[in-house]
Image (cartoon, rainbow, N blue to C red; front, side, top):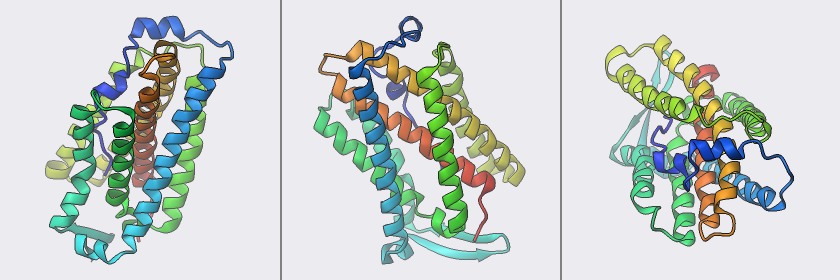
Length: 260
């Protein structure tokens, strides 16, 4: 299940207003500091995705997985029923997100790093169910498709001369709308077609967020460089891009994945 609790604080970053973003968006001069800043963000983000994948594979093959989820065979494929432990695992990313919301502002770099890695581990535990529900080929195809799309969209966000700051409010509203739609479908509509529509819209929204966040993080560098916030901005940025990647991956898998 995708996590739509990407808080507004992380989207806002460290004070880059839309007007500032517009002023900065046109800068194309090579800046070694900017390159180092963005590479640090990408390295953190990629390491987080790798950690999530490793944790997922280890957990789904451990005895604890059977204690957390009961596997049920249905006419439509494998399904999972969460036990008490399973619900704790499924809700753990939300708990980390709330912890980030209330604790990140005053946390030092070391604490932010611990929160980031903890979030990646919790998401890995939560995502382990996909290896039971979907075929390995489907998971691999969704991952590599997401990686290719993410690379292209992030490159666009980094290089485009177009100011994308106006996308922010619209995209955040879209994320909220997705959450509402999924809750309605879970408890009221229970429609496969509606879920497919949600997944398609989710892919588009997080594709837009990938480009938007990349440009925002690039612009943010010019605000925080040389300050104590620069190192923290790297971790904030990595979390944003990590969530964009993971959510786009989940929605693509829901759209095109073949069930076991």
